[in-house]
Length: 201
Image (cartoon, rainbow, N blue to C red):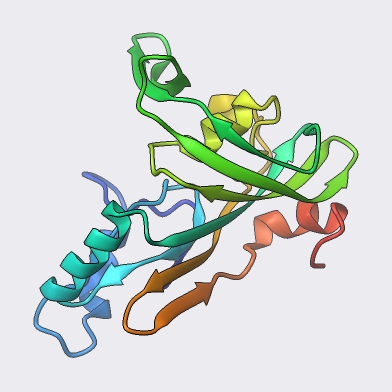
């Protein structure tokens, strides 16, 4: 596993991406490790790599069976009602010439479910823990916007420009022979907002 910085795509046809760094992560293996899942380019935090083909297949099977524990931290622009809940809102991809592609909540979309819990609050901000139970594109971003409090810095879904997307893949747990659990540090661009909400300084 590695701590992916915000702003680095996992893969890209042009420009810098994680793909260019994979040879340096071989650590004695013949082939480059490969990502077992995806994170948005602007999302920081835990990313799982498979170093061998058998292990990559095993990890992919865990993701497909929804057996991987995924926990995210986000700072939202706005206030949420209540202290915890679950969003069940299907998502579909839409595209227009004017706005490009994006995801939206729609009855004909793919099922998507996210559990959330408030960790702290500040005027105009809410710090939350998010646990996606499905893995749709932009799921957490759209579900937070659907709740009326988009992720801070998420200009696509109403979070404005706040010096970076305030979304962190904070923890991931893999049920292998023994459970493997890792935690990512809070990136610099999120620290001030989390501190304002009563979190780590």
